[in-house]
Length: 439
Image (cartoon, rainbow, N blue to C red; front, side, top):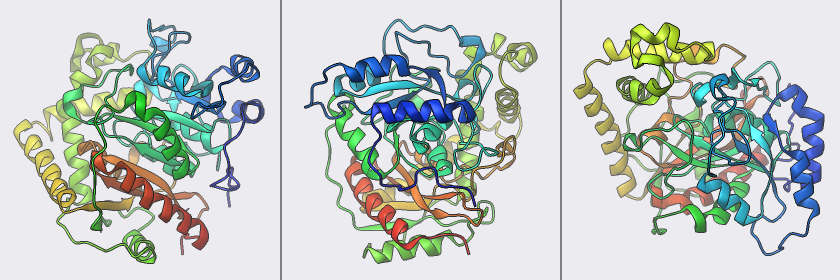
């Protein structure tokens, strides 16, 4: 059974000095951080710090998609290894104001595009539980850094489960915040806002940790006022034949955990995981040129061969598959729009009744390297959070038979942040006490 690198999931955050020790001891093997800023971090930590700042002296890593004026922002891509933004992203300024200390930038796959953290610029990141497996993507380096104690938290981005899948694979918590309340700015590569897919948020060892980071940055980044959300029940989105993976009885365990906390089970029509997967895939295929065109010479299929040179093979494959799917299986854009609208309509109706949605984060443990792409249903559940531009939380929920971490997901509307976090914290603690794992 793989070792648990977090020891105690709800342990206190490391100091800057402890984080630096872990970086020196483990980053050579895990390659979680693509840019080491420990020298600067130690100087900052040694200087007098205002004690009244919410994250004063807390070490964090920053996903290498957020613009930083004093360091390159590459999106893990060899083409952009020398890219130097002129200004810091708003989240970077907010973290500085909060007193947090950056120890490094965390590795991402090329253009933050794949579910494995393998970069053409900095190489492959590894899972702290089992170094033969991926930590996920695109916030893979972030999750590996947090799980191994190199950072107290990381600030990630989430376009297709990019915070929540790595959190699940590495046994930590990850929160996707809705862009309706937390607009994304200073992110590279740029994702068209009208798609409503991109979100941002923290990864930390526990739900308590992500709540603390969210609270600290909300005064600087949250643009919509908090609104009340009265929880009247939770609908469980169970597995179907497409998504059963290695956790076919997920619904039963999730219901048992909810019952333990006297959470009312609710019933509502929800889209099946297979429907969610295809709606998301169709939307990406229909907009692949807007997403990847600036990074592919000519922006057309005929240019793909030369235009994707310098990108990782996994990124090239995704671009090619999306462009071909746009011309074939998903060529009917009207049908795509209807499928996406139906998913959003069904879930909005559940939210309107005061329901949250609970599901597995994924029904698979962290895949071995070069195998994630073949698991078509790997991200079926997390993609729902992106299609809805929802508040979506992933947190540890036992383990698979192999000992690899398992994870539960809670989804709610933008205004349900506090409700999602409160319930998530209770369920996470119950999971630790009861020790759910595969039978």
